[in-house]
Length: 404
Image 1 (cartoon, rainbow, N blue to C red):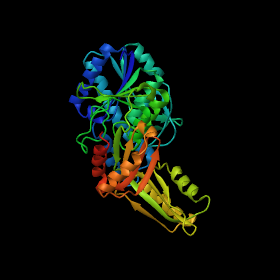
Image 2 (image 1 turned 30 degrees about the horizontal axis):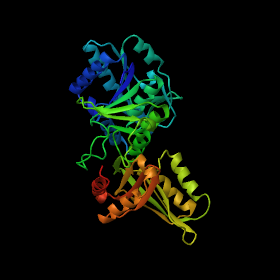
Image 3 (image 1 turned 30 degrees about the vertical axis):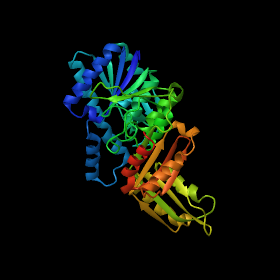
Image 4 (image 1 turned 180 degrees about the horizontal axis):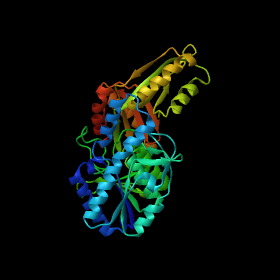
């Protein structure tokens, strides 16, 4: 694809040490030979973010979210400065910038801020001087002048938001895998790389466990029609294009099977079947900045019902604090938690016009004696919650059954 401006993003494994940073610099130089303007977004080195979070937990079990943002945002500043130095050492003028310098303006939600606007005025000025601009991913600044971070995988969102603001030809996500696969190859050895996939399918995959892209970055790309190209940082193998559905000619019935082992199930037992109970519960969780995934409400029995929902395990402690305060006030009988679950999902645009996909999924799980605890659907996906111990088997057997 002929391009004049491209945003590249390199993840933590791509810049894990000095040798890898130099390798990224060489790749950027190669891109600059073919493309007029190149902007690079980088994550923190290797496991830096986890190490910083670990330090905070040695200080306190409940680190203040504002201070966590101050702490974690430093990781990307290290990698951006080192990469800019490496580029200069190789003869390419470069300048590094923080999220604040780029004018990545966010809301005030610490640790999971959402981007409201990208100014990019200084980025454009530096590109016109022939420089490569290296931007710290994962971070921005709120309207109150506070440093914020965008949540796990937030560097993807930084890159896509910049690409949209700069009207880039596309956004290249360079990572430790060669593209988007039909399943996790570590679980399903016969999984293969997908050449092209729609924004809608990729969004469902990212939201249901595919780690290659953050779901918010795909949503941003879809909203602003920014083509994504997912490829390896370590070789020149072709990657996966993520584009609008209209640009993809061949659409398989099922594109992929994804899994997510990072969720927990919460069940509020014996909730009075009256207006307002669910609103009180989920309103309080929203106020605590907790994202709810699947929600199932049982049929009312004796004017009482059970409500089950899934959340990230990272939020489970917060959910416990909020929910246990509410049990009494909404008149529920109690609450239970299960963090040994797996969410298994089939994704495919072809589901819209092909009946029988759900039946095939349920039969496959039943044939393998896998019990289904929750079910959720959309026009292009079917998700089932099963026991953690059955998760990998479910992925392999579904991948085999649907000939992915």
